[in-house]
Every structure is written in C-alpha cells, then in structure tokens.
Image (cartoon, rainbow, N blue to C red; front, top):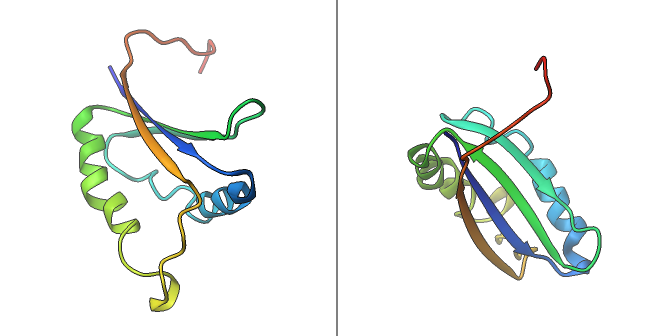
Length: 109
C-alpha cells in the first residue's frame, strides 16, 4: 500500500498569503513524479498556525527519489533571475510519515 507524508508547517498569520501564493505558483510541479499519487495543501481554520502539506506516494522509494531530485533542486539556489532567495514563509517544519493500512473512497470512482 501507499505511504503518506505530511509536512507540518508553522506559518505566522502574516505569512499565510505568501505561503499559499508560493504553492500556487508551483501547482502540479510534483504531478509527473514517478510514484506520486496525491497532494493537498491544508489551511488551518482555527486554533493553530500549522498548515499541513499532504502527499501520498506509491512507496517510500518514490518519495525519497523525489526528495533527492526535483524537490531538492526546487529548494536550492537563488531567487528569481539570480536574485536572493526569498525568506521562508514557514517558521518551522516537521515531517510525519505514515503507511496506508486501510482506505476507502466513493463508489464508482
């Protein structure tokens, strides 16, 4: 079964719009990665400043290949047109890992 990776990002309120715009500008960048199955950016509604970046992968090897390849490349180097790299929108990050042991979905899909 699949593996799920949830990146828990602590994002101060004044940086929320910045974070969401950055994700929107890279929308679907991960879609073509081997073993990629699903992505969601979850905005907190109340009681927390933590966004959840949910991804699901065919297996751990697919996730690690993406981490060492496309993800690493996207997060290295300078900013746009050789300028300074923008300041991170999140003030903290924690990665949670899970194995899918049971799942269900709408019928007929």
